[in-house]
Image 1 (cartoon, one colour):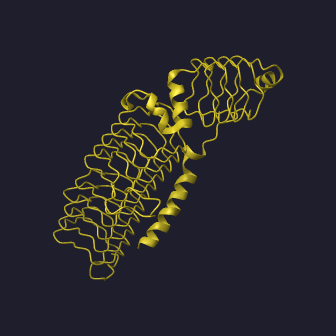
Image 2: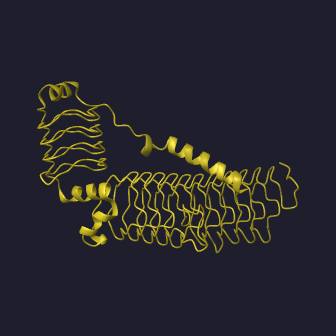
Image 3: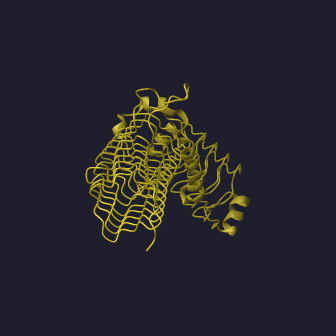
Length: 390
């Protein structure tokens, strides 16, 4: 079971990343050819439209780009020494390894801009906010020693993709709209952090503390939220700390193919969440409201959804629910077609209008269930008999 689940999870993660617009979004080549030619010929291009322009390694020393729109532009390794980028828009631009010595970026917008390896000196004019982001990206944990309390950290719109920040304490920080794809945040303290509208695709959040954090409208596709992991030993410690999402706001969060085995979700807001293909093995979801949510192909093996949990009208087609505790759960109108419910406890469960076509209920407990227009066509019943279709 675990081998099949692991393989299935890897496939789903791969598909999730391939289909995820956060990962494969490429800025549209909407720049003005005339403006680009002007810049290349004169290095004077204030207020120019250079969205998505290819300027990697370009010699732009002393260039005037005041107010220019460089959204999504590739400036990797560009020479921007003494350049004027006052009030320029550099959203999602690539400034990795660019030389910004003595450059003026006052009031420039660097939301989700890649700053890894960018050269900034004492003469570079850069707002405090982006100075702080640059230090964290390039100096890591040590840079926080010169900061105020982490609760005061403003990392809104920061691009920390691929950052290695295990155990970092960012409790109460503002990471609204930040990009943390592929970052290592294992064991991080993210309690009360605002991560709304952020991208954490494929991020390592194993053992992280996310109590009362705000992850609404964020993408966590393929992220790893399982228990703490010891990479030296190659296994989770005996007393591994689970990822704690107690009271977290996950309204509208994309958790497709995310690994949530053992995570704590007590009192979490899971409204409008996407759990397509998510791994929720042995997770405690007692009393959680997942009405109408998409859990197709999710792995809920051994999960506890008892104590009047609400899964009415939920999409559980193809889901793995073997040995799950579904006692007294509301499954009215739910789609459980071809779901695996072997050994599941469905006692006193509301199954009115539920669709179990092709589902496997071998060994399941159906004591005291409520049925009305429930479809068991082609389902394998607890005794192993296949229910005939009427």
